[in-house]
Length: 178
Image (cartoon, rainbow, N blue to C red; front, side):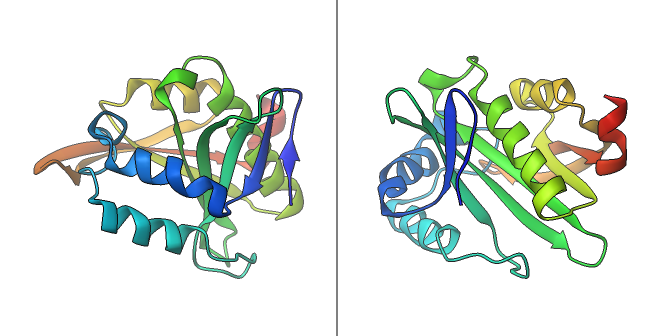
């Protein structure tokens, strides 16, 4: 399965995504709003889990590589995980390499996955969680129509420090209103 627009393509993880994934998860700057940086071994193990085959019945992540159509360069990755099969709710998350940030790639990728989730998977709602300190991420979610549904106090531990998280959601029925 490939999802694409005029600038990017999303494809399920394969072995060619391994190096960038490991680089992301070991980099303190990339991980500052997500987790403490992983060791090499932890990053390899996480990639193995995230790159497993996926079906709509899965309880795991559908992980996509984000690539430039022009150059083929790997720009980042985006994942979708159905967290409530009965209510048709999925969580999304994304990481973009620093050199590609601020250029619209994450928004385009998120829109492709949003369309795929609502149209192909017939999901009812997408959610996202991000640190209150991750301004770029929560501004992007708001720009794309996600609604801030709450703030979870001390919801995550990043680098041995409790961090508050914002929770966002967008419902299929609200898409026409945006």
